[in-house]
View 1 (cartoon, rainbow, N blue to C red):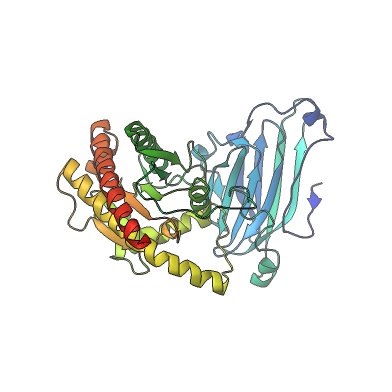
View 2: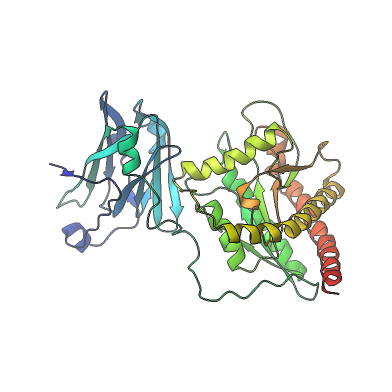
Length: 409
């Protein structure tokens, strides 16, 4: 019999006392896709079955807006699981799985109706060491679901560790290398846009690494990435990493796709509460939704005084970000030729909301456009864009330092 779970807040299992653990875990646990799946077992129940090559620690919890069931594993190989389309439940709207952060995998089920954990158990073969995880869920009222859902104690576990004292960041005056933090969008469980077998998260990581190398070779910049591998990092986590690295500026890199309409060409975004157009609003909303679907709770309680202070800092930072965006547009246009009619747009991307770091988001192109996708796959085109960005940063750093000197006088 599977163990009955009385309170559905979290569940974490470790195997210190089992024979399987005594033998030691063997690399990544693999999923047998043919013997795994999710299916309805009645009109008010569904069941998850995962056949694993070995037992792994795991936890289960829920988040709301939208209602989601989140599974964390340490760590599994999802290869082949998606190929059989294991989703046979009408109670699930969307299923995502992949790397969440180093050492951890995540699966998120977005629900069509509130469901709570009823029974869960992991059976381990004492001889082979493989295991079967079964989790049964039952329909719940919205009130019951809400009572068992909320921010977790581990919220922010992907953020850098807190430090006791943080020296105030000094605005650059042109007397030292600029610290540039590049943010390849998406990663891990969040693949971003997809066109055939090409994934946005892979293309922007390649570009970010190439841009980082070029910046460092100039000798005028220190460059870092928010992620160096196929890892998921939440939107707040990306900003926190930039701040931890002492970023003078933050550049988020994307290559999105539109489900409807038509868009092409490189576009540079800076922050505004009002989007420049419908597509800008859609893309900004989608970025936040990708964080939600990856199982990140975006709930934040803001302190009134802190909010006022941040808004004061944001006024100065916004003008610096807008200038950076204009110069990137100019630099890239000089490098690759004419850009789209409105290459500098505005939108409310959460990743641009650091009040103390000038930040822009560059849509390198739209994967839904064949020409743009071909450009993204061509190293010559990428190098031209990189040359334009470096030219823009050189120009911006001089102008920004000059403005800073005037403020000091």
